[in-house]
Amino acid sequence: MALNNRVNSLLYHAASITIMKINYHEFIKQNEAQKKETLGSFYHDVLSRNRDEQVQLFINFLENISKVTDDQQYENICRLSMEVFLSLKDVNLRDLMAVRLEAQFELPDDERMVDSMNLLRAIESMPEKDILLDMIKSIER
Image (cartoon, rainbow, N blue to C red; front, side, top):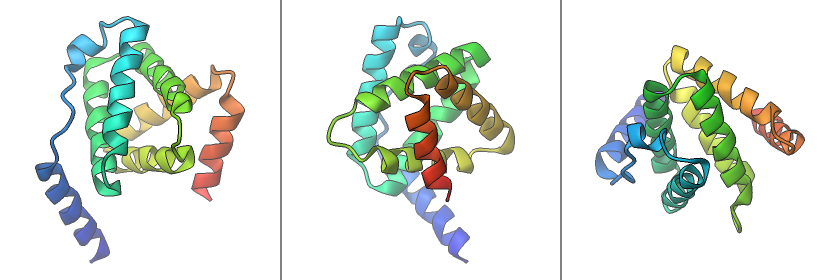
């Protein structure tokens, strides 16, 4: 019953939010600075929403990215996304990471595995990997 309420809530919010428009085919062609700017705008849009809407925005973003990238591009976007994530000011990063991971959990199995693998590879390549991995571990408990 609780799951049905959650699904209905997500469907309602998905239909009612105006999602920041990203042309994903153009996004993957942008240079790193442009991608970071787009990701910054995406995060600011996410932060202006309630939790259900935040999850839905991440789901939409992750589903679209998986459709237009190969693993190397996906990993690069994850790395850039984490760099922008870490640069956010006056934000509870743990809560925002929890939303991102909740969205990942809502993805179909194959997309969830691709996202999980590429996110982990991206984090492992970053100097801040210990901070990010500790954050994720604290959420999973």
